[in-house]
Length: 224
Image (cartoon, rainbow, N blue to C red):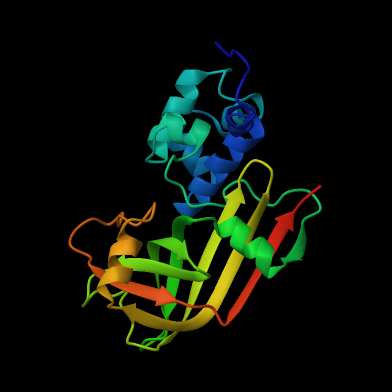
């Protein structure tokens, strides 16, 4: 059994991290510090002391703060499990580095989840889809009349990325090129057998879209 503390979990529950989440939630609700203290049934001075001391000092006090903010104590102490990426903030001395095409293909792997960008009116739309990589192309399944089904030959963008919340690092790969329908039975059968081809969205999605990048670029965010 491994008793080593999870460094990411320790980082999330540090007093400064918890205080930041409380302040962000308070400002999101349009509350000032005095209003939050009043709703949590404590003096403003004591509220400030709790934020400096951390959750272990007065667990009941943080429970009242969570109730006043309309959230749970766990969400304040550890962060929402379904929160969007980027909650941890930038890392020290961030730097963007360009990726080669070979590095881009290595990072996107054989399959995963990306975002398809379509040029529709009144403005571009972006949908998440799970993709497979096949012979230098991206391919994904959707419904024939679905929102993520572009017209044959439509110029689209496709993005895959990853972020390390704890270290403040990550990468992003962007592909630009035309989208084509796959209608050859042998190709359809082969694509359907690839790992990761089952649509996460479920339902009947027999329509395959293939994107052959005319331009593939990427950037890596490093910190130190």
